[in-house]
Amino acid sequence: MPAPTLVQVPSLPVEATWTYAIARVDRSGRVSEQSIVDTLGWTVDDALALTTVGAGVGTYRRAASGWYRLTPRREIRIPGPMRARCGITRGDRLLLAASSVHDALVIYTMPELDRLLAPHHDANLQGGLS
Figure 1 (tube, rainbow, N blue to C red):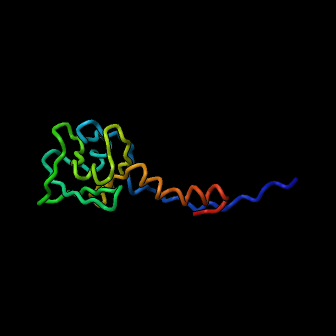
Figure 2 (cartoon, helix red, strand yellow):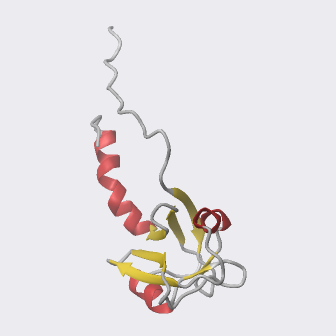
Figure 3 (cartoon, rainbow, N blue to C red):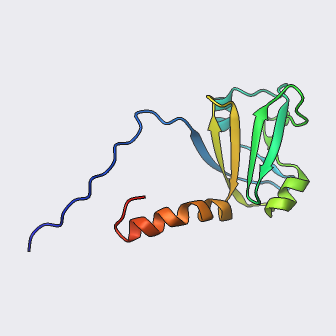
């Protein structure tokens, strides 16, 4: 039996432009993931603006007129209205994506991450590239 044909794998970027972490939400709606905060270089004195995008995504950016700040322990606060809108509850895991280039943090709920990745998983399971 002949060997199967190998699919050509596209080359990966030389350097990742985003840093990722998965972290749990505590009972007060805080997320503690120091590697992400370190990547962004954010301090407790930085004002942050928060925008919700859809039902499972929120973005934080440094902004002079921002209402949000890191906690004294450099945790990320997820306000109650955002948690309610996104269905985030205590103990939920979130994907945190940080870009120092954009000076931004994007938070994804697991259902949103599943929605975004499911087509890629399906294509890969069927042997196609996505």
